[in-house]
Image 1 (tube, rainbow, N blue to C red):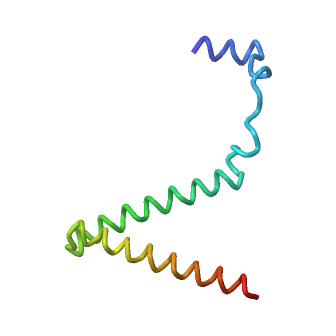
Image 2 (tube, rainbow, N blue to C red):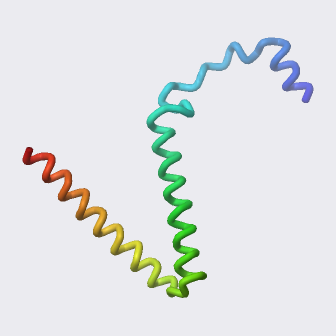
Image 3 (cartoon, rainbow, N blue to C red):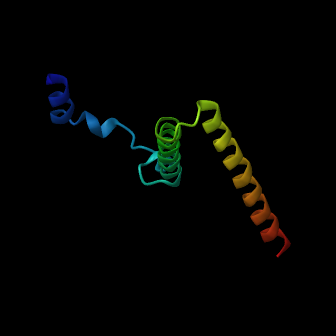
Length: 86
């Protein structure tokens, strides 16, 4: 506690460099990381729902996610290919 009070009262905080804009909370990089974290939490929740509520075995849940990943990659590839030909 004393060290924190000294840090403030002696104005030692002025000697610390500010966080780069790339690593600021509102930057594109940190917003993307936040979105990926939220997606991972949704996937974890959905996996729990499939295995606990629906009764699908764990390997079946993994298969669902594998198929979803393949189809989303296929869809994104088709969309990007369509954009390139325009």
